Amino acid sequence: MRNPGCCTLLLLLVAMDLNLYCAGSHWLQTFNAVIMEPGMINSRFIHIGYVDTIEYQRYDSKEPIAVLLPRVSWMEQVPLSYWTSETVGCAELSQVDRRILHFMVNKNEQRMDDYHTLQEVYGCNVANDGSFLGGHFRLTYYGYDDLYLNENLSSWIAYGKAAEYVKSRWDGGGDAERWKTYLQGVCVERLLRYMVLGKEALLRSDAPRTHVTHHVRPEGNVTLRCWALGFYPADITMTWKRDGNNHTQDMELPDTRPAGDGTFQKWAAVVVPSGEELRYTCHVHHKGLSEPLKLKWVPPHTIPIIAILIGLVLGTLVVGTVVIFLVWKK
Image (cartoon, rainbow, N blue to C red; front, side):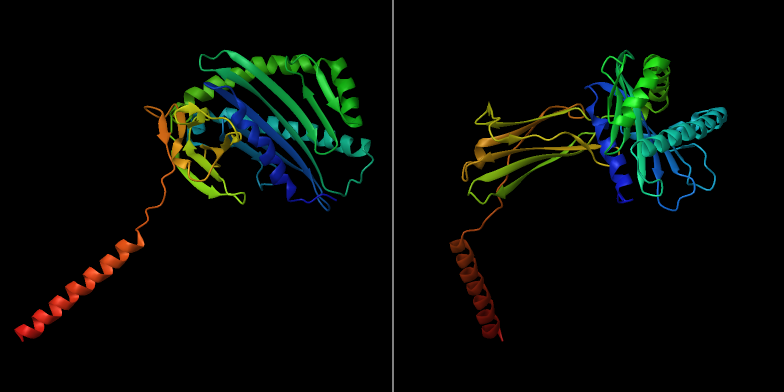
């Protein structure tokens, strides 16, 4: 039996792809999950909508009153009819995804009273001028089956025997074409509408907070790590230079990651010989900056021991002089 706590992790792992859109573009993403646990009468269905990294709506069948609710203030401008119709749509979709989950469990000859999850993610990507850049759809029965649209949204790719069977059904039913039409049409229209409603939040530019850290390695050399935190949008460039020349040797540059508060974070690390740290500079380019940043590691200020001793001697002389003067005066 899988750990029930992994559901949150699975959603997080899928959500990590939010930062993969092209520079100067925006995503509308939908995440659906069906969760089946031992002793659960009705499996739980969760629907979450994102514009870029901002969660704008959510539906959870576990709530006492399961309705689709806004998650940001700018979505409260949407008419009540939207929330009513979309709530009905979520309820209908939950039944469809539950049937798929049950089918996956049966096809893989597993027990229904175990822990199972089905995840569905789909969305569209548009440029700042509103033109369609791409879309995707993926259905995952975690660890067993995977079904997704190919890059041009024209056919299905499947892994796992249950997914292969679903693919054969969807190939004959024209589902790929329907999803392509949705992603290039309704999805784009909604995204552009949300971009207007939430433009103050979605089109802002938050400059990164930056600093450089210094770590001595067991081998004796040093890792310099350049940090950029709290920036938005996600597009950022970070490079290291040695004596003014680009330096890529032994450089580590992981993907940009959501910080969990609607902003992003990233770091770039380079391994350098001990004693040569000041020859290296980190360069950061971001939309929120008026000009690129140039950072260096700043060694901690140290006071030579001789200066400390001189200070102690002088302090003793001053104190002694004051005491002698006071005794003389008395």
